[in-house]
Every structure is written in C-alpha cells, then in structure tokens.
Image 1 (cartoon, helix red, strand yellow):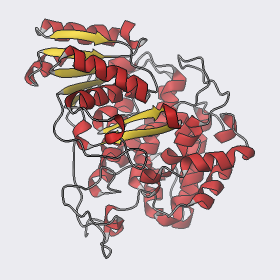
Image 2 (image 1 turned 90 degrees about the vertical axis):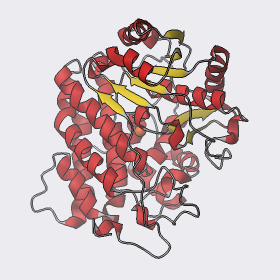
Image 3 (image 1 turned 120 degrees about the vertical axis):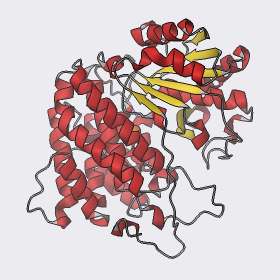
Image 4 (image 1 turned 90 degrees about the horizontal axis):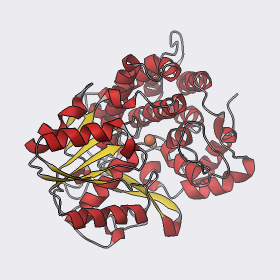
Length: 435
Ligand SMILES: [Fe+2]
C-alpha cells in the first residue's frame, strides 16, 4: 500500500482493513444531556449499571436526573464488581433479563461498562456462558445480531471501554483473565464528560495515563494488517486487525497529548484543563487499539495482575492485594520497546518524538531504547513503581509469569516480532527493575 512502507503487501496477507469508529460525545456537561440521547436511541425503560462506590457519587445522580427528566424509567443496579468475574457478569445478566429493559446506561470505569456489554449480550441472545468467550477458553461464537442500545458514561479514563467491542473479566474456575470481543458489543454512544474525572487520585491518573500511552504505542507498533492472513470470509476480519493507517492517526495524537499533559495532570489531578486532554487521549487511543489491537505489554500484564501476592497500591478503594491494570502494563513496557524497536524503528522513533523525547541526531537503531528511556523518565516523575520488583515480584516468579502470559495468543500474535516462551522469559527478566 502506498500509504506507508509499513503496509506493503505480502503473499497471503490481508489487503484491506476496516474502520469501525465509535459514536462519541465529548465535553464538559455532556453527561447532563443523556436524557435526550437516550430518547433519540428509542429508550423508554433503562437499566442503569454502576458499582457500589460510584453509586453514591455525583455522576450517577446527574445521569439519573437527566434520564428521568426526559420521561425515561430508570432502574439502578449498583452491584457491579470492580475487576468483574463470570459470576458478576451472570448476576448483571439476571438483572437485565428480569427488568425487561429496552436499553442500558453504564456509569463508571471499564468494569462497569464491560459488565453492561455482557448483560446486554446474554439477555439479548441467551447462550451457554462460554459460547461468546474468546478461544481457546471459550467457543468465540460471533454475536448473532445487534444488541439493545447502550450509552456508556466513563467516570475515569484509560480503559476506553466506551470505544471498543471488548468486555474483560476473570473466569473464576480457571483463574484466568479473558474476554468477549465482537464489534456488536461496542456501546451505541460513549459520553465523555471530563468533569467526572476531577476527583481521581494522582496515582490513578498516573496509572491510567500510562495505560493510554501503551494502548497507543502498542497499536502503532503492532504487526501491520497486511501481515495477518487474509480472512476466509470478508465479513470476519478480527477486531484486532493489526496496525493500519486509521489507527495510526489516533495513536500518534494520543501519545503527544500524554507526553504533554501527564506529568502536570498527576501533579494537579483536579485541574480540568489537564483532565480534558487526558480524557481525549484515552478516547483516541481507544479508537486506535479498538481497530488495531494491543500486543506484548498487555499480554504480559494479565500475568502480572493475575499472580499478585501482596502489593497494595495507594489511591485504590480496594484493600486487598492488586496490581492495577495501568501499572501491570507499564512495568513491562520499557523492556518491550527495547525488544520490538528493531522490528519497526521508524514507528518507535515517531512515538518517542510524540512523547517529548529529544530525537535530533538519534539513529534508527537506538529508537526502541530512546522510547524506553523517555517512558522510564516519566515513570519516575509520576511515582510509578520500579518495574516488576516494584509491584512485588522477583526473578523466581518468571516461570509462572511466562506460563500465564503465553496463552494470551490473541495479543502475542499482534507483536511486530515473533514471541515464544523464551522471548517472554527474557522480557520478564528485563522488566524486573529500571533504575
Ligand atoms: Fe489497557
């Protein structure tokens, strides 16, 4: 393809990519407009999902007021679990079935939006729970048709669940994090109101900002869509189609906004002038990875989050050990960039430049290192733990981390460089500490 050398065709590879843009409304005050949005989508009787903490906060009250003023019936379900499981997805599905709703609104973080996607799916097209779950754990059956309208209203930034057709959860009996991925799961409308995130603690802003950054860099440096096998059926291109010219646009701007605003955003999390660009970056990166897909830092993060022993982060409501998603991703990222740099050095150099690194006179072979060094510098300035050791791991944990990350094939195949168990082993060793 003439758009870029990166997308040169290869024999047997795909020759087309799809563009699935989410429908988004962005801006301060947009949450108070959702009554009109819900009516326009034909909703009259809504199930509103949130978690027990968000249930008592301003955004839920604002959403409820907007909906009832528009004459819409609202029933609130506040039992969403943060870090949802198959059990909590099933409980929300029961709520969705019993309520006989004609639409859903979710207010909260990625867990809440993902739970609403699952409840909408299983109440619209009932099936055995594993039917729609990603292979090899589930059958990865395609969603049979359109779902009921769903307005997703994030109260944080980073997961970009409002932009994607992905719902992530823990399958309890296998102690595995997996998900359901299909474009019909994407919410009908995402409403991003930056004023909902002015109460986030600085540690949460830092972790989520780096999650956004990693979504964007992973999508930009993913294997090109032309290197994925062409689909047997033209309608069955995967959501994670690889790097493509559309995702590139969104990702580079997301990286630039993070590079420019994250350090000050962490220092002053209530400053609306910082919340706006950070939330917008999260949305752009969501558009990017929703059409391209992530790779190694996210594949490794599932192991880092899943095998946690005693790490308890500051600023998160939970008092049990956990490695929050953004931290579990970014502790691997510098080691990954040093590894993937040689596979697409121009793209690593572009990312380093967008992130604010000094690129003048840097040779292409140093691009991965330059990006890694810039990230490490920003991690130190924003209080991120020093690699895997910083979140409680040591060298002895590497074999277990490898065995948990290796099954994440959907992500691993999207890496610009082939990755097997020995490469993962080296990457986990290299992620132990950075300074
Ligand atoms: Fe992420």
